[in-house]
Amino acid sequence: MLKQLLKKQRAAPLYEKIVLFSCGNCIFWQQNKQFYMRQHVESPPRRRVTFKFAKTNVMKNKKGDVKKGTSLKKGDVLNITALLKRFPAVCALMLFGGSLSPLFSWGYDGHALINNGAIKNLPSEMKFFVKKRKVINKHVMDPDRRKGDDREEPVRHWLDLEYFGAPPFRALFEFKKPPREEDYKIRSGKLPWAIAETLEQLTEALTENDGEKIILLAADLAHYVGDGANPLHTTENYDGQWTGNRGIHSRFESALIKRYDSSVKIGTFSAVYVEDPLKFIFEYLIESHGRVEAILQADRKSCWEPGIYDNYYYDRMWGELEALINDCFSQGSFTLASLFYTAHINAAKNITPAGDSGTN
Image (cartoon, rainbow, N blue to C red):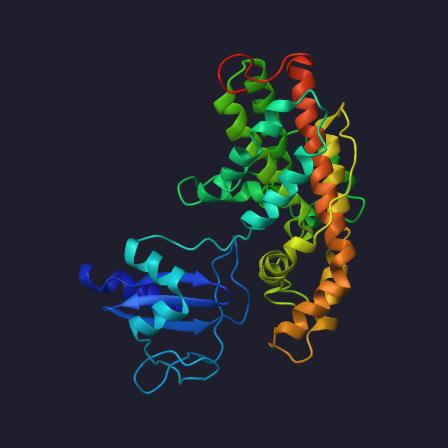
C-alpha cells in the first residue's frame, strides 16, 4: 500500500501530491483534498520507514462524521470536520505543512516534576536555580520543540541498550563519545552523550555568569535527564512492539502520568558531586533499563480485554507501578540535581550564578 502511494506521489501533478503522516498506530494521508487513514500492524517506527497494513478501522458515520467505536470499510474517506474533532493535532499539521514526530516524551508535567524534585534538593548556595525554577520549567520542553527543525535532535532522546550486548552492558562504557556514523551502534541513540554535552555547556555558562544561557541549558539538561528516567527510552522495544504491548510508551509515559502526576512522590536527598559524569550517566540509564520488564508485565496484567484501556486499566496500572514510577522520578531528580551541583562546583563553588548581572 505504501509503495503504491509513493509511486502515485511521484507520478501525480503538483496539485495532487499525497501527504503522509503517522500518529499512534495509524497512518494518515491527504490526496485531492480528502483525508484517509490506515491502521498499522506495527507501532510507528521512530527510525524505520516500513509500514504494514491491517484491515482499515476508520471511525465515521453516514454523514462522514467520526463516531467513536465504529468501523469502516477499506478505502472509506474521513470527513475533514470529523478528522478535526477526533485528531486535531494531525489536522493542524496537515494544514500547516508540519509533520508528526513518532518519538515520545513525558510531556511537560513529567519533566517539570523531575526538575522541581531536583531543584528542591539542591544545596542552599544554589539560589539561582531555586529563583529561576519556573522559568527553567517554561523551557523544559525546548528539546522536543527542536525536533522538527533539527534533524540531529530526535536521536538525542533515547539509548537502545540492546546494541551494547546483555546486562550489565559493559560495551557501553567503551564509548566516551557517540559511536561513529559507520558503526551500527549509531542507531542506538545518543542520549547519554547529549546529557554529558549539555552538562559541559551548562558549566561554561555558569563560569561566564550568563544567566540566560544558564536557564536554557538547565532546561535542556532537565529534559534529557528526564527522558532517561523513562525506562522505555532505554530499549529498542520502546513501544512494546516486540512483546504484544503495542502503544505502551504513550500509555505509560503520557496517559498514566497525566492521571496520577499529583500522586508521584519524590523523596528528599542530597545532591552529590560527580567525578566521572559519563560513567554516572551510563549507570543511571542502565538502572532505568532494569525497570522495562516490570512495565510490560503490568501492562499485560492490567488489560482486561485486548485493546481496551479504560479507567480500570489505568487504575490497575497505577496500583502495579506506583512504587516503580516513584523510583523513576526520584532517580531522575537525584541524577539531575547531582549534575546541576557538579556544574556549579566545576564552574566556581562559591560564586552565585549570574552574580550581580540582574539574573539573580
